[in-house]
Image 1: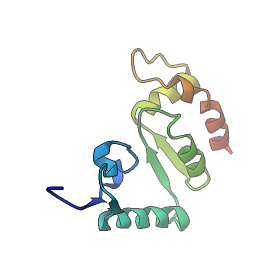
Image 2: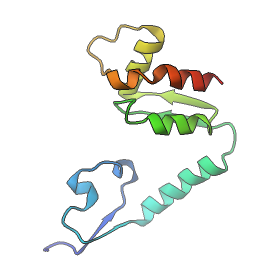
Image 3: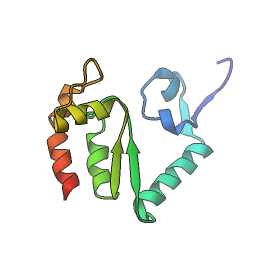
Length: 121
């Protein structure tokens, strides 16, 4: 190797992606960095001992990729704002909104009623 022997990921916002530049493809030794640790500690604090009220803002393209996260967050937060491409799926399902060619997650749309029912409780 010319540049490094160890891959260290310090980018919390992209850690969930399986791109070769994010998983340290080709490196035998991989680790998370100090900034990643701080992000995880902050996230744990909010989820484990939140100062109320708690608002979660979630974005992304597909509801189906975030089902588990959304369902878990419903038990821990007071309100959730759904943004990004996911918002169009929710709006089309819940409000019958015409969304044109905007992102729509057909698979995720099937679970939206269950998410909304749990959120109403």
